[in-house]
Amino acid sequence: MDTSNTTRRRMRSGAVALGGMGLLAATLVACGSNDEPDKRCASRTTLNHLNSKDCKSGGTGSYYYGGYVSAGKVAGGSFDKSAVTRGGIGGHSNSGSSGG
Image (cartoon, rainbow, N blue to C red; front, top):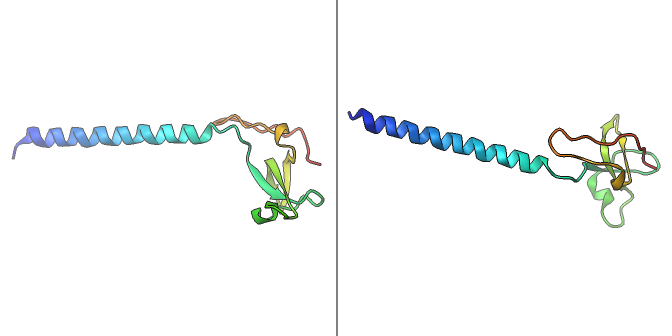
């Protein structure tokens, strides 16, 4: 068996694996750099978390940006999209404003 062919094959597969990891890393960075804050559907009056279909045209909900859901209620964000920012990987939400 020719060991030089085996060595070349191993090196090629290693290069493919490293190239694939670079592509994966670039994809993750691109996905994380979106300036759009997270949004979820919620009731403006009760702050209950709702199904996304309730925020479609004619629905009873409104989009709540940033924050989180705890015990079925939204908190830490705002119904005002401009009051919440997201800075990609390592980004943060401005949780100082409350929806209303």
